[in-house]
Image 1 (cartoon, one colour):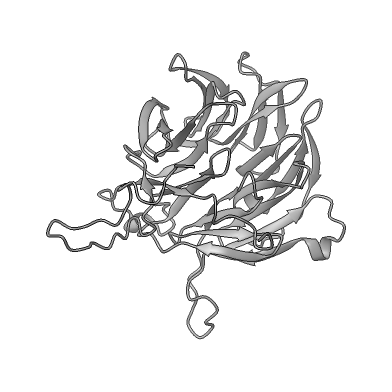
Image 2: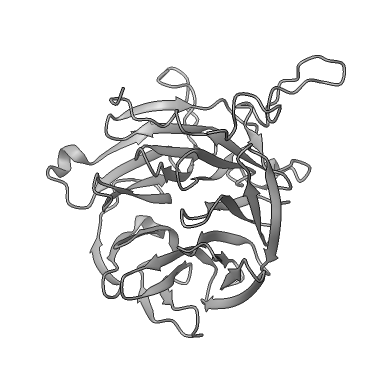
Length: 368
C-alpha cells in the first residue's frame, strides 16, 4: 500500500528559505495538500465509488464551482475538471458506477455531471437552495434525492423535469444521509425523520432529537451484516448523538458525547464550544471521524465509546471530510465556515483540502 508512504517529500515538514524549520499552522498534521483547491470555502467532499479503478475526489465550494481531482497512489493529486453553478455548491455525490457526479446548489438547481463527456445538465429544481443530494440505488429503481430549504424532499429519475415524488418536511433540510434501504434527514428546529426506500421512498419514523441544539451533520452507520442500523448526528454545540433505529435497549444503546471543545475537562475556565461540521464513517472498520469549527479532526470508536485520535489544531475551521472507498484515505477541508461572523473572514486566507493515510489510525480499540 504505497499511498502516502513514509516520506515522499510530499507534505513533509516545511523548511524556510534560510534552512530553519517553519511551523505550519495551516497544515499541522503534515498531510498531503490537494493541488488547486477552490477559491472560497469548501462545503462538501466525496470520493469515487469502489466500482471505479483509482481514486477520484470531488469537492464543492462557495465559489459556485465543483472540482474533480485524481488521487494517485503516491499521494499526488491531479486536477481533472471543474463545473460551475450560479450559486454556492452545497453538496455533491457520485452515481454508483462512478460515471456521474451530482451537485446541489444555492441556485435552487441540481445538476448531473457526466465525467466522460464533461457535460452537465440540470436534473432538479426547488423553490429554495438545495442543501443535500444523494444517489439511491434500489433493486427496482435508481434516483437522486434532494433536500431543500423549501421544506421538501424530492426524488428525481434524472430524465424528467418533474420529480418522481415530493415529500413535505416539517422544516428546512439541514443535512441528510442515505444507505439503502434507509435515509435520514435532519431539519431546522431539531427535526429528525427516517425514511425507508424499498419499493418507493416513504416516511418511516419521526424521532425526537437526542440533541438540544441546531443539527449540523448526520451519517448513517451499518451493523456487522452491512445493513444500516442507526446514525450519528452532530450539532453546533460540540456534541454527537449515536442513535440506533431499533436498539435492544434504547436507554443504554443510544448515547451522546462531547467533542470539538477547548480546555478539555478543566471546569475552572470557560469552555469554548464549536460546531461539529461533518461526520464520516470508516467503510471498513465502522469507526468514525468528526471535524469541527475548532479546526480539528477526531477519530472515534463508537462501540468501545473511546476517542482514537485528535489532530493538532489547524488555523481555520474544518468544513468537510470523507473517506475513500477502501478507507485508506481520509480527506478533510480547511476553510472559513463563518461561525464567528463576517469580521473574522479573511479573503487573503487560502482554502485547503488535505489527504491523510487512514488505514491504521481508525482501527477499533478492542481488535489487537
